[in-house]
Structure formats: structure tokens, C-alpha cells
Image 1 (cartoon, rainbow, N blue to C red):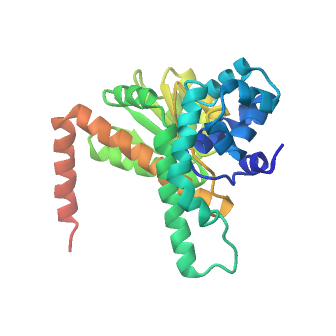
Image 2 (cartoon, helix red, strand yellow; image 1 turned 90 degrees about the horizontal axis):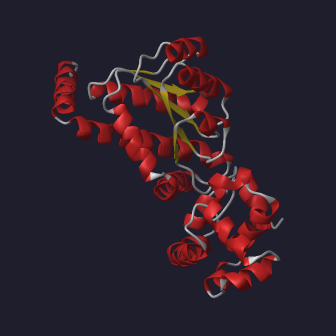
Length: 298
């Protein structure tokens, strides 16, 4: 495996749509798919000016294997990948020249830390636009709008995203909860009413507490919506709809803050879309919240 795919495995990879899509499917790639991904990442200029047969010969597989791999990567086919790579080369050329965004160590100045953290969050939001499935998003909105009760699940760094989601969905007039301890989460999941929705948030999609509670909610008859960074995980296997908001990873020093910001934005987009879907009911609830906020001002 090349250095580039080793970096993909570890979470340090360049920007762009192709890199973003490869990262979210990386754990499920076969050996031949990884070899194809390797070429896409390390020889983008070659890919842009090559035919599918030439790329297949370069990798040592059939043309049909390359086309199928491109579809598994989330593209319509090889031509779609070529177009995306060409666009990535234009968009990210300047950024690549400045060096990798995720390298921070003790020698970094405070100003550099600020720039890198803000840059990481910005890049994460850009990548999420490429990876969140709009059809899944629309389906989630249609389920959340009439739901009698919404349970938000999140542990570790995702707990604040779950709490924020419950707060803002309550602000638009929905009955929403985000219990913090595992027992309360499991009980709430078990007692979700008919039409209830569980929104489970986990960067890796493998946080046991969240996956277990989401599975309980599913078994109780609720719809499970996953907000995660990887297309293949225990959480996506449990969920009915997955909003995969992953992109290039930025290293352990930056990924936690960037991932948290991206998931907050996705949940906030759900809230706004649901509020617009419900119209006057949500607007009245927001007016009531504004009145309450005014009463708390000194």
C-alpha cells in the first residue's frame, strides 16, 4: 500500500471530493479497490488524461473492476471520478502548496493554532457538502417533522452535539430529549412512542453506548437516523438513514473539533428544514423562546 493510502488509513489525507468520499468508505474497501484508490489519490493528473482501460492496465485489473470500484466510492462511474479529480486539482492546488492542515505540535504558535482550528472546521464543512446524502437528509426531515418524540443520542465528544440538537428542536416546538447517562438513554430508547425518531450521533459510528441505545430504539419500532463520519460502521448498520458527514481527516489534534462542528451543522440543518416544513407552528414556538429569553435579560 502506498504512503498516501497509509495516510488515508491513519486519517491524514489531502482535501477534495475524491479524498472525502474515499475516506468515508475506506474501512470496507477490498484489496483491489484500495489499489485503485491509491492511483486516484497519488496520480490525479494521470487519471485526468487517461482512459478507463489505461487506468485498469496501470492498476493491473480489468476496466470493469475500475468502473465498479468508482461506483463503490460513491461516484456514477469513471468519468464522474475524472471530473471530480480535475475540479479538486483546481480547488485545492493553492491549499496543497501551503502544506498539510493537520500538523500541529508544541512548536506551533497560538496564532497558528487558531488558524489551523478554524481552517479544519471550514474544510470539514466543505467536505460534508460532498458526502451527506441529500435524499437521506430529506427523508430524515419528513420523519422528524411529524414525530411525536425525538431522542438524541451521543456519547463522549458527541454528547454536546446531541444536547444541542435536543435544545434547538425543543425551541421549534418538538418534544426532544438527550439523556446523558447510558441507563437513561436505553430507557428512553425503549419507550419511544409510535412514530418516534432516534437521532444517533457518533464520529466513528462505533461508540458502544450510542450503538446499543440506537439498536434498542430500532427494536422498539422507532426510526433511527445516524449522523456519523463513516459510511460503514455498526451505527450505520443499525440506522434506517445515515447522514455521513465525513471528509478528509485532519489528525487527532484537529479532528475532534472539526468533526463536532460538522455534526452540529448537520443537526442544525435538520432543525431548520423541519422548522420550515412545519411553518407557523415552529415560528410561534421560536417567538415564545424569544419572549422567554427577553425575560432572562438583566
